Length: 375
Image 1 (tube, rainbow, N blue to C red):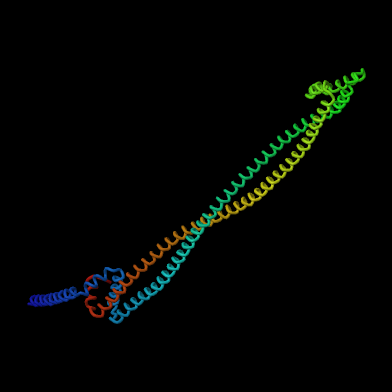
Image 2: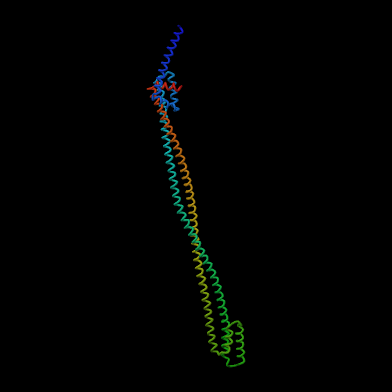
């Protein structure tokens, strides 16, 4: 009887327990079907959400009330919001610095471009000046060479003219000397012929002596033939010949004077021309030296401008490279900030959801924690 009674009690207890289990399962199913349960499943997938639910589970096990848990979550949310505000300020400063850096690089690039354009213009103008100076130098050197050639030609011509003058002068003087020798003898012959009619022995001998002296004047003298002829002429004819010879002699003397005057004038004219050529060459040489100095100055200026252009080109490349690198850095910082902001916003939304669920559906939270074995 006692055993039966115990059996009945055991059966009753099992029935109560079964009923309680059925009721618990029914309640769990109701909680599980609550939309907040799905929200909690989504929250626990997030690393921060999982940590928040662990914290809530510890608070619940510690017997903390809802207000305490909500306050804890509020502090956590405020901490995240504070970090976001701090990061917003930091990002604003970074983006401001990035904009300032981009503006600085843009200004450097523009200055470099302006330098390059200015250098190209000035170098082009200087190259044109160098070409002009080079052309002027070549022209002046050509003119100097022309004058030098003319000077050499004039000096050669003067030497030839002087040699011809000396030759002519020598011939004229030889002829004059011949006349100077012959005319006294011709006069003597004239006197002899004039007295030849006496036919004295003395006159014949004197006549013969005069003839010998004229003949000895030189076999190469062409006037010898005239002497031979005149020895057989009468005195009147001889007088005429003497007069003609004196005219020729005087003409030769005049020719010597004229030749000498012409030679002296030619020397003076040649000296004047040579002096003019010298002065022209000196002037051209000075101008050429000045042009060459200007050319060298222009070349140095051109080289300086080209160095300036090379520096500007290097600055342009460096600025472009720096801008590209800095833009990439700023973009990375912006992307990181945006990603952090999105992540933090999600975390703040998770905390807000957990707060709302705890405040309105604490049982759902407890059921989820129990089912997920969160501790």
